[in-house]
Image 1 (cartoon, helix red, strand yellow):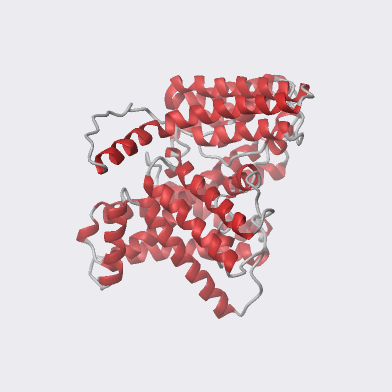
Image 2 (image 1 turned 120 degrees about the vertical axis):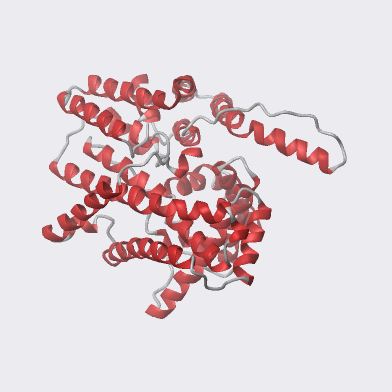
Length: 469
């Protein structure tokens, strides 16, 4: 059930009506939301509901046992039970076929015949997101940062909450669970902000991301038939597409949740205004960046064990972050590439917030960072490294004008310009809700424009890019 479908709009309208009717009856409200969340996920494939329910029951039970135990050895053993189950399920469904294919390729490279076949496993949508969300709860209880939740239904809703179930943001138990457990009031401000986020989210997805997607697909599907300039514009188009697609989903999810009185964390903070690669990761996919920092980088030792160990920990974190994105070597290399950029930032002393500079210097820093980011997106988008190399060489050696370039240049610059203009407005005010502080006429004019564009373009059956992760 796609957010950008009439079916989902009808589904949410029915859920929201029941939600409002059940105000002040928290138990029934949460049970209704849990049932709606399971129905939402079952619309993708009902068979995989067992995975969510299994993870829910295991982590709920293990967390309570961890909290009740005074033995540190037993607590660690119980934590390992939870991690083994969650990561084991994730590894099987996401990486089993990848492992088999990689092993076969290795054997053939060594001169052996590898007669193997993959298991043809179907990847459950959203498994990476809700698995990480469940893991964070168990770890937080183990660290004594969070009391275990008392009711299984509340924990089940935390894991399966439908607005952010299949593509995040990856919420923390310390943030979302208290909202699940207490009575919620829908304020007029929640409705205003929720509607604004939903409109802006659909605009990013339907009007921007889905509009440039066919152009991007055409160039990447036929890399040898386009000039280097067209390939470069398609790459910029992909940067626009993946940002508009994913940040659009996150905004819709936050808006839907806000209409019900929930506060979901911000997932993007104007990433294409970053002035170095380190700052980029403080702005892009924040829920994953913070999760990797708190549950992987810091447990590895973080920056507490010397400079060399710090850089090693950073590379390990980004390597695994790349692998999290997909079971393919291009994602691994993408993660290693960004890890190397972060290590370079550390070696060059680029830590903390970039200092104030003159406008030309800031523009130069943003432009250079964007180029480095584009190289990463090339690695992310291609099907194999040979294709990435061919496109890269084509851009460097065949950067010439062609009549076809117009059909790429205009929509790409229009989409990127619209996004960056809004980002600059937000950045100048240092406020993601800057549109809500604008004069009423300006605010409603922008939102009306977004709605008219969405209606004009229409919903298309285009799944969100991050559903595959």
